[in-house]
Image (cartoon, rainbow, N blue to C red; front, side, top):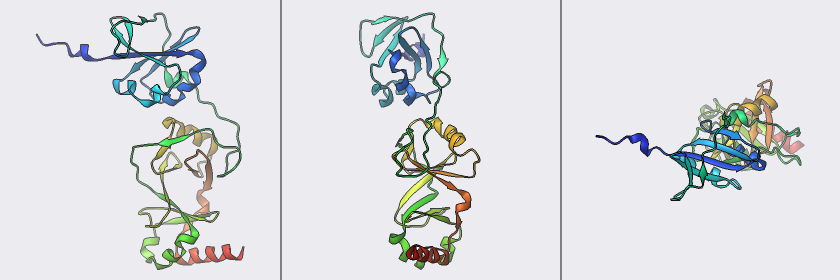
Length: 247
């Protein structure tokens, strides 16, 4: 008789003190996780084996992970159970149980004193880039030498002493590239710490959907209106460069 392969499927539970609930925001987008609570403890279940090994949970303070076997909870690689399964709990999907809240900060420009508390983190996922931020002084000679057809599909605007280009294919210029997500422009190689946060941020900070939110790696953003962009040409670039010199 063939063995029942379902016996090889591991089921993982976890617990942490209720006072540490806020730290669970880092796994809020793991929608397969169920969460429940008693007087002093937060209980979680439904972790995949891959999630059980992820750094996101092992960095949580006072977080204890268990493997469920025959109604008993075993710590990782333990031969003796730590406790029985907690019964009578009311389970809820983690993304429903942990509500998002927003700070009442005025976060409009890079370098301001009050910074957005939402963090970006490095991501291994690859995304096509559609925007480029360049120092004007580093590219002014290069732009003048580019053929017209390379500029036709590009729009641009000025951000301080930097030129910000959007369009594909991007120009081959020195600078920082960005990819688009739900109306946000994120630095290449980065994503929101809580991936499902992007739509909520758009609803709060870009209600009219009339622009982009341009983020840096530190979690600060700049709001750019779509009407700020204009078609790129050598003449428009030179005129802007001249106006900067006059100012």
